Every structure is written in structure tokens, then in C-alpha cells.
Image (cartoon, rainbow, N blue to C red; front, side, top):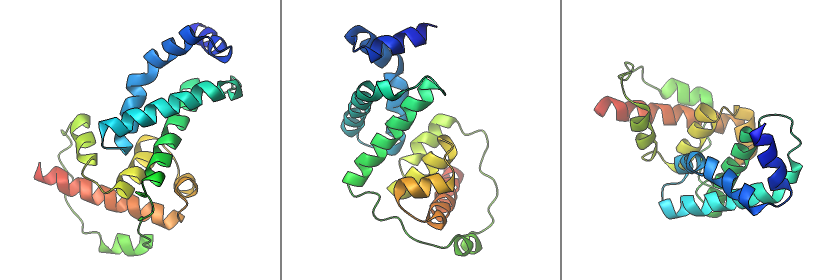
Length: 176
């Protein structure tokens, strides 16, 4: 009930309600942005841009579906727009998934005791395209079709980027 009142007040333009909403979700969404963007200053810029969009589009939220999910989608889209503007997504390699699968060596599983925080740190070392597809697919739960539409690439490109990201992460975890 409290969240519905907060949303209603934000829809009325109540600045105090907007501040409460920001305070409640800023840290979480900072983490979402950070998975896509490396520099803290850029993450902060994207986060502010995302909240601006949330506040200006909040009247479009109909109450159907998860509000946090609605906001998260805006945050992810803002991060992707930032990467596009930086030209970091224009270099996704087009590789057929079957070829990528054939070229993958069978490796032993990496230590399953590695912590989530360590994996997130390793993501910083992935090329932007790999990291972006990995985040969208593994963490955000997008399908390859949705990723292909968001990034304006083929489904096979999305799949191959994910395979390469997983292979790279596995290699990095084996050396940890």
C-alpha cells in the first residue's frame, strides 16, 4: 500500500515523494548501471537520466506488473543508450553461434565457491559487447530475441557474444 501511495504522489509531481522513491531505489539501480558502465561519473550520469525519465514517464505506469521491474527496464535502456552514444555497442562481432560452439574448448567448471561480488568485478574486464549481452541475458533475464532488438543485432550475434563472455569469465575464474 505504501508503494502505491508513493507512486500516486510521484504521478502528481510531489517532490518529496520523488525524493523518497529515489532514496529507496538509487543504490540498487546504481548497481544495475554499474554492471554496464565502468566509470563512476558515467554511472551517476546515467542513473540521474534514468530517474528523470522515470519521473517524467511515471504517468505511463498503469499499475499492472511490477513497478520496480518497470523502473529497472528504464534504467537498463538508459545504460544501453549511453553505450550507444559512446559507440561502444557498434563493434559487436557477428559470428554464427554454431561456429562459436565448435571453437569452444571443453573446460572444467570454475570453482563454484567464487562469490557474486568477485564475478561482478570480473565483468569489468569483459569487452563492452560481451558484458552487455551477459548482463541482459544472465542477470536481467532478457531473451536473445529481445537482446537482438535492443542492440540492433542478429539473434546469432547475441548468442555468440554470450558464449564468448561465458568462456572469458570461466578463463578468468580459473586463474583467480
